[in-house]
Length: 415
Image 1 (spheres, rainbow, N blue to C red):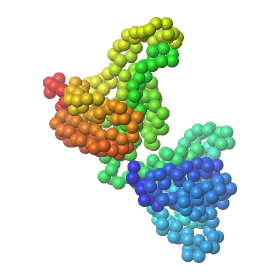
Image 2: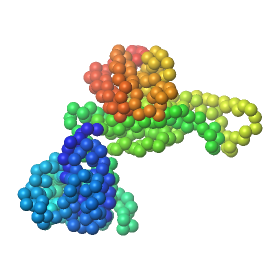
Image 3: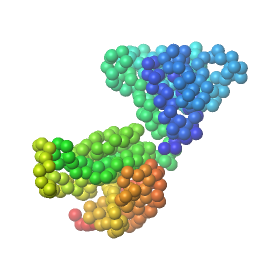
């Protein structure tokens, strides 16, 4: 996502124990191309050394109004004018109270008052503080003044309490800022719900062995991330892979084809688009041995039976989502992909060649997108870039179908 590229973000760190998360927040913002400068309260500087923030931001850290060198040219005014976004994470109950009162007793609160940039707060405090009427009154007052909030979340707290008050995790904060900064032209899936399946499945033979395939899940995860970055609400049903969850999505982990079928069909209600990027096992062992099969003969025969066909079942639903399949082929790419498009009555199919050093386990790929009366070639690029281009084509065809409904490939006009 490029929404935060070249954005100037002023990060305020106040004196909550969640300040230990803030260096990671700086790192993630810079990974998105943002320039970050850090201002700390004196209490925050007792929890995390300013040297840490200087190291991860690459910029000097300001901690007080009485910095003679910085303030010789009204440095706090310069900082306030520099910022495109002001983010305070963590924002303590005390800092929220000071902002609600219009206090300028510290460099951080002074900057919040002087800056005309959007102000975001990521609260972090004890659950009793967060639910106290005074804190809620301050929150409501700040919200009426245009202050935006990220979190807090519920869960275990440093003091041992359970409840609301945990600062949102850095990936969630970055995702929220990026979504808000996304240009309208890139919000191609805004307001839509997208369901994605990704990764392989594993079909057990016995307690230690299984049948699977070489899918890494990288392409499916990249598509889920790209859909979220295009503004969609994304649910990702993932097979057994070791890939971190993309920011801003709901993830459901499964192992077998039957589990993927069950969990995906249970979540299809309300989905506008389904993208089936998973490499689901077509067959599974008919029986699963209760104990490890011992090596007693030169051969071992497995009776295999068909797994449920998730893609075909999805496309056959009376009120189905816009259904996109994937075809990973080793030969005759468009011939086999077109047959799958027609046979399963899909709205669209993404086809790509796979094999040795091609498709599986790589970080780049190419694809051809096919639909009823059209096609589009997507040249080789990183899977992240390819995913964004796929999402763009999917969004365009989805909007076209909504404006002028057509019959999916292979589906009769007579029901």
